[in-house]
Amino acid sequence: MRNTILYLGLFFLVFTLFGQCKDEAPKRLDSKTVYMIDTMMARHFKNLNVELDSICVSQQDSLVAIAMDSIKKVRLREIEAIIKSGLNEPQ
Image 1 (cartoon, rainbow, N blue to C red):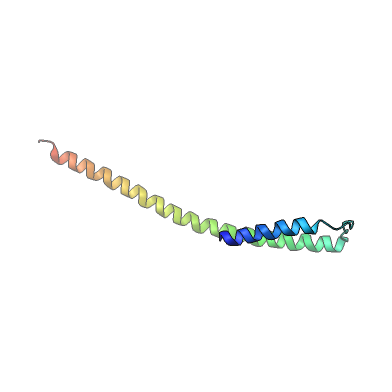
Image 2: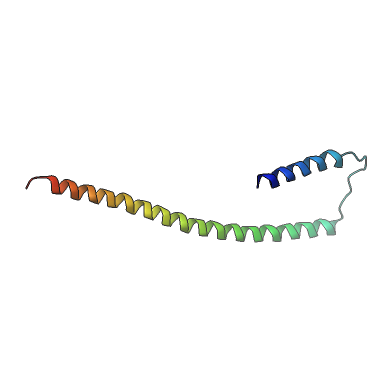
């Protein structure tokens, strides 16, 4: 994973350094191209939002289960402590 990030960073660094050596004026995009790019990005973000929402829901379910287990363990220890202290007292 680190190697992939390192290679991507190196690629973008080299691309940025050598990609800026041209003396060309920036090209203007026509309105159809801009509209197409905006539409594609909107669809992409909509798909990402759906996917991220489903990931959040699945993580939330697992985190709630972990929290419930932790609360149960704490309560069981408290009950055991109460039982032990009640058994040690003279009646």
